[in-house]
Image (tube, rainbow, N blue to C red):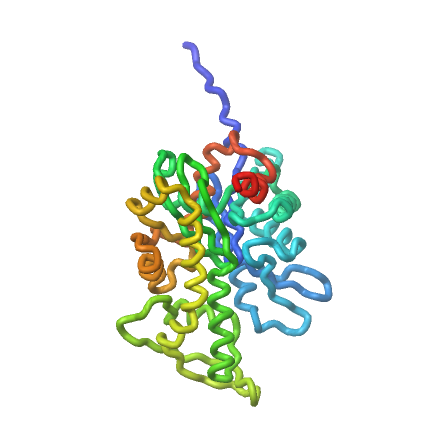
Length: 354
């Protein structure tokens, strides 16, 4: 009796990773296993020794609560790396959690998403950080393209679709067709900008200093960028700016709406700007297909209504908007052998188009 031996599947020994390296959160998708890592982009480090104490949720809980020798920090700002060393250490720990490297399981290939407005220098910084953290090869993909793939939009056809990805540090707006980006733009107004605006307002209006975590809670619980039918409120604790003593106050949704209107308008203006620079045929497709919202910032109450009112185009919130980008990155692992390794020079390509 003869046996037929199948050619071994070499991919069995590799674990390719897809990484959503966000300003607020890092999500890692492992090929064949799904999203295994979902942690805040926060690192707690001992200033004296330089040793990493905590990464992710545990480090986020330390924000504003650390002793003098410990600092909890975000190594990414506005969608790009601001502290290279801390980003490398954070990725090393998260990569180890996602996949264990050995002789039979070599260093992983990694696909990482980058904002549309990224420069070549920023691209190289991301690539170098991933290589130093343990990646064998690094491939880049634009965030809005990954978001569209994760939202299951049929972008493979000659039919225009628009994606507005509102993350923590940046908002990416893109028109996609034929598996590519026809027009895109990025603005540094997103979830973090909303948090900072709320914190400044509470200090100016009520004389109370609140932390970043509290400002984010206000945004999530009672924040809105479109008028609510019913008023809701929230009790907030902070430090009195004059006395330095603890103080509690009540914040209402109507005042938070007035505060968030301005940054929300900036996002709407960016969407209108991209539409103005898009070909009439693609704009006609978008008017028919609507605008898809992804990213954590898109979940602020009324964001879809506000953009629909400003553009006159129906807006839809994607399913699981927080995870669209990482799922799209995960899908791109299927054709990683055909992807371009290294920088993709988004800024240079945009200049050539202009």
